[in-house]
Every structure is written in structure tokens, then in C-alpha cells.
Length: 284
Image (cartoon, rainbow, N blue to C red; front, side, top):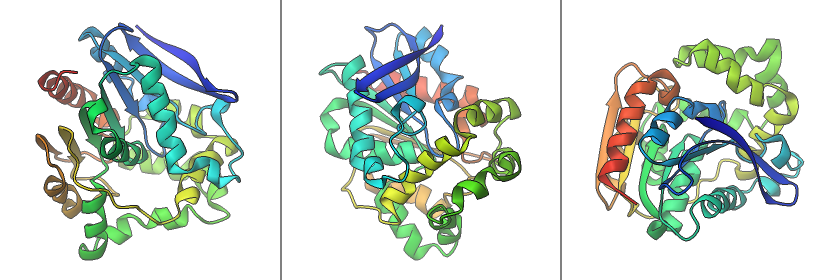
């Protein structure tokens, strides 16, 4: 059974999270990216619980109404604070113990940094649609198509970005979700979280706090599963395939033909199977 919990990590920072499974089981912390919400992992949570894990998928900083600093106060959305939120959640559910980390898109960016800073805390890393930062930086320089795939990063820094994304009943998001394979029912769940100006301003504050700077990290020393759909509109083949050279640990790369940026929503059964196999191979 999946339940929604409101988890207070600090005064004024209360996170909405989907939680399933045995609280004493190995933790699987699942971090969503932009344009979606904790509901990206709705299909995986029950399966992880049935396999004996404690699965936790939060709405992250700004996405949770109770953990939404002023979106114009960009330093309060600094990546180190976002990472701190994730690690505080991990400590709440798995104090001092190793855990499994799953990241998608922006949640993947946090996850690469967490793996770099605390490799000993992670039993495994599972990544969706976010290549290793070194591979991504190389692709931005050498892949003629990657800058175009990433052009929304710059667009999201504009003063009218919130209004543009939410115009005409969030048409931009609805069209992108449909093109990238998200079922309509899931889109409605995500828009129930981010389809309002306050939440969208907070989601875009992640980009505004970081700008276009991507700090480098070294090779990842955590066993890593990287899942990429070849129809992903933001990540090209060079960045995806180049991630292998950035992993100094057991590594598996899975390419999903015809799948877009949101594989857990588009092919939930496939993603669930991949996760269960990877976690079983790298127990906490």
C-alpha cells in the first residue's frame, strides 16, 4: 500500500512524499525531475514494497507546498540545499545505513552529486534521462544536436517563463508530455502538483539558482544503472553512451527504443523490472 506522508525536515520545510513498504527494509529514495512530480514513480512504489524495500518518492523543494521558499529568493534553491533535502530524507528513513538512490532529470543531477560526495552511503544508483555531468558537458561541446536539446534551460531563466509554461491550461507541458509518452492520467497527476503559478515558479527557481553552470564531478564509484530512451527530447546519444566512460564501478546501460524522457511513466513495467533486478544485484 502506498501512502502520502507529510515529512517535516526543518521548520517551514514539510515535504509531501509517497511512501510504501516495510520501514525497516532497505531504503529506495526516488527523486523526480522537472515537469513531473513524485507521481513519476507511482507504478514502481508498490512493486518495490512487495520486494521488501522501503520506497520513498518526495515532491521536492518547491514542489511540496509546505517546503516552498520564496521562488524569487534563488539562493534558497541552490543545488547544495536540494541535495541536503535528499540526504535528510535518507537519514530520516535509513539513519546511518546504506540506501539505493533513483534519479530522473533534475533529480538525477542531484543523484550524481550525492554519489560523488557520499559513495559509501549508496548501495546502488539508478538514473533515468540524466547522463553523467562529464558526459553531458562533452556532448554540449561536441554533439551538434545537444545544445538544441538543452535550449529550454536558457529559456527557463526568462522573466515570462512561468506564464509561458502555464499558458492555455499548461499547453506547453501537456504537448511535451504527450510527445514524450506520458499517459494523460499521469499528466493530470503531475499538473495537480505543478500546474499552478506558485509551484511552477518554484520549479523554475531550480534553474534560476543554477543558471547555465554545471559543476564538474569525477567518475562515479557507485554501481550505476543508466536507462535512456532513444526518443528522449533532451538527451542525445553521445551524452547517453558517453556516460559509460564516467563510471568506475559496475555499470549497466539500457537503451529503450521509442521511449522518451519519462520512462517510468511511459514503460512502467519495464522500468520496474530493471530496478528490481539492479537493486537485487547490489544489496544494501
